[in-house]
Image 1 (spheres, rainbow, N blue to C red):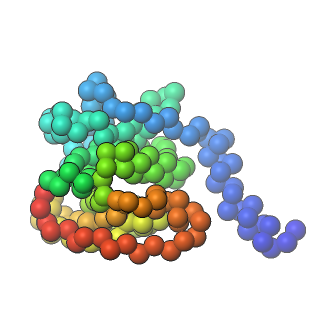
Image 2: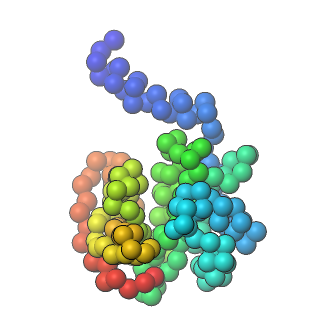
Length: 198
């Protein structure tokens, strides 16, 4: 067997493991009755920095149509909580998580792709999110979709709880993930975060 063939087999082995262990997620919009499951997943993923049930309730009314759930026959395993910014063409992913039991199986990539597409459907030109600087796995995922570091929020969640602002410019362009899949380089001119809240 040639070296390149073995490498291709190794690179595809995760797909076999993924198919054998869990089916890909079903994605759907969020209903108010889902907020309990989202709050529980937030607490599992983010601990004291999670979105609480009461915070989700407040955010849901004006922006619940932008949210997504990832589930399978066993339950809800992922979500993205998204809002409009002060500028109606600016969208924020304020919470996105995949339960540890479904991580490293492609669910995060599938959910992020669908989230970007959902925000595009609502005419967002720029999509932003916050991420811990040391969360290399999440940062790498966001970078593969074209997100760039555009600022920092010092002590955003309290003393020592800084977050990087990552932004994706999508307005008037074909989807960034599509270009990346074709190997086309993109360095968009993304507006720098001005530090204003969502």
